[in-house]
Amino acid sequence: MTLPTYSCGVARDRSREPEAVRITSAAESRNADIAARQKRYVYSMGIRTLCFVGAIIASIAGITWLWPILIVAALVLPYVAVVMANAATTKGDGFVLLDKGPTHNELGAGGNGP
Picture (cartoon, rainbow, N blue to C red):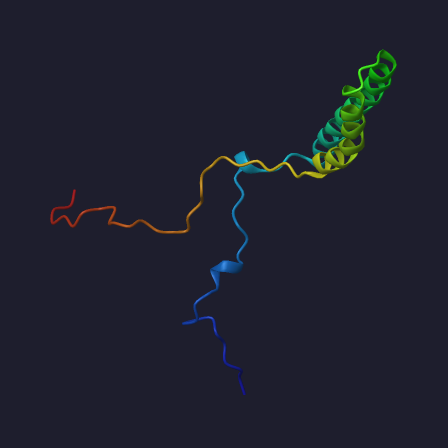
């Protein structure tokens, strides 16, 4: 007794095939990605520190409208820094790969050969 096979006549589901990756759209290495995220996080935390120092200086100088803005910025920046650090960097070249054959005949119907 042999079991039926479905190698012929059954259409394959192409929606589950992995998408082709071209070298121009390949992601950076993991180490480079982590280094870039750490760099963005350090920049954001540096700006946060400057906001705290600026708020203290503005308070001492008597600039009553500026220090609350700097405090709020210093309180919001950690959230922004984490979101920016965790943002995935995607790289694309703007081209879409299509899985279609030629839409017209490549060679014309010629009667004379070489």
